Length: 463
Image (cartoon, rainbow, N blue to C red; front, top):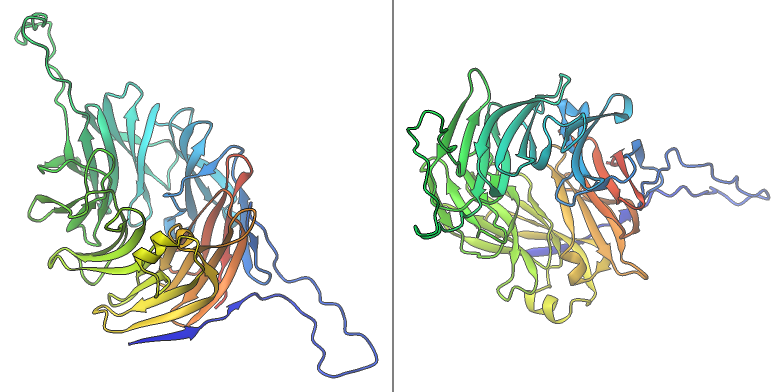
């Protein structure tokens, strides 16, 4: 059963009200208690802004790298590009205004020079792991840094080889999962054209280094250890389930999506051949996840719910990229309930109502909430969502038609209070990424690009 409930977006604009008619004019309203602006977004009057922090000149956010809350919220990690290199800053201290370099590809903040392939923070928020490809491109190093200490960190493991994909994750506070996909070796030349190989038993000849490939499990405590998990599938960037039982290789230009079962040490091809993006895992059902993938014609995208144990799959929303699990395996999805793949493809600029759908785990009941403004299918496909399970609240980046460029809206929807608020809006220029603090009290977002500058804003959404 579906029911549509209209939710008004509150603007919190200060207005002067007179309780009765008098001969004197009403006093002019005073300024709102908090007014702020990021690079491209105007924060709604009345929203409490905890900080605005300008990033160094030339810094640009990376769309897939939202702010990372660390050390129980005392520091926020920000990953982006600057001067042609990937860099990670840590912002801490009063109002998160004290910055330091946590990972870099070059300069004094780098543990070693190379290419920053991936970063990940431990579940307790106290340790940073970095995957760095050495400057020569023939080795991948894992660098671990204690966030409450100084210094760039130390290399704890090295893996010889040239790699087309390197990604890093934490399975728990002591175990790192490193996914490597080795670059294919060129075929050997015929024996006629080969030079004589050196005798490996000769005293002055060093044996060639052992090349690594596949999934490596690295224990960082005590003496440390590395245990390769032999899998038949080529690795791509992994997304792990809540307890690290399953992982999804999301695929890229050189490898298809795969599903890994760590307990059984198996790896199988996913039924979708094109790359996908995993949005969230169900905390109550270890093998259930939400992902963004192509429609059957590969002309648009949709959000799907998939269960590894049963193979059951359900379409949650067409032409959208925003969804999350809420509580008790329920889901929240941004989209339009009447939008289909066919309509999205044939009429990409057709007005559709921006809606939030809350679906029960068994999909027997779906409640649809209207956000009160229109979008287009091609714009809904660019939407994003950050969900706080602690506050049971979704923060959504939504676009609506406007000239000369689309209009970006940052909207929150609280499942607990059944209410929505417009937090900020502005022209869709640059990049916006966002994330919630650990318990959902605050929302941080990065806004900008290398040309206009980038600002990190932390605010307290109204409730």
